[in-house]
Figure 1 (cartoon, helix red, strand yellow):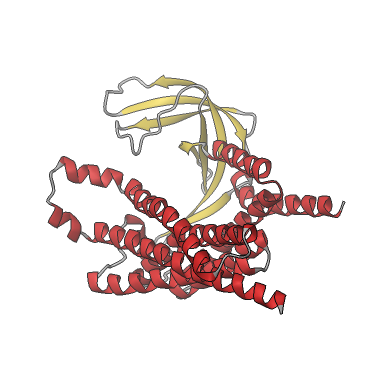
Figure 2: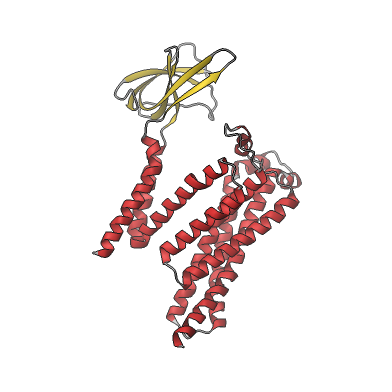
Length: 384
């Protein structure tokens, strides 16, 4: 009965935390924007709604490049819920900016109300969050179905991770706190909470935590030295450049922001490796408590070598997948390898991938050593 009560408490807490993040998706997101001139200040009230496309008609005079449409929609969420409206949709034959709709599509709408009383409604994007939430529900259901009690704990750790990123890490950076120190602190809390919540406080958890932080420290040192020598700017992406113009007027150190992102990106893989090795060594020792320190070390390193290959590929392939369109552009225009390697964007991704992989590799012997030491020391204490 006690376990059942705890399980229900865990489910409720996990769902509550997830609801906190999902609520803005379905809540009314109205806002007021004002454009200030020398004498005139015009306020614009924005009302976000959702609609279902009923009919699409091309306007007369449209050509193949610049097309205008009348789109009839039924509003199913927002202030005009239940009403059928018609809006004008402009297409420019550009797949990045065009929102091509068909009957049955669900779209996001914005209603702009000027201070003068004029109203304009237009389509801003497709509705995607509903389907994303369905995928999330399937993922959580599989966690519970396969993982049972540990699956519930995993949901709690995921909710905590989301909370630390959305409510602590990002707001802290926007408030001007040092990105690297803030990321290290958040990583510390996430790691401790994840490992201890899943496994409790024991030899397996202590060894995993030690290996994880050792690997992250190694990745951070390599990243800092390499980043300084390679002269990475941290401005290799459009998003980083756009941060220079945000309304909060934060004076970011973009190199520190880059390094913080590398640390956070490496954390997941390093945590996976540290926990896997520590868990495997604990199982080996529980099956054969008579194994000596050297044999235990050898077994742990064998497990680590098997993990090493796939996890290193995981990091490299993840970064390659993110830069796939760019790599295709280089190949299409036959750009020389020397020029590619010296681009800030490419050098950033290479340093990111290699420093994370080095941290991952060093996590293996460190976790193996600490696990073997603690396991043998624990038994000696029990026999004395």
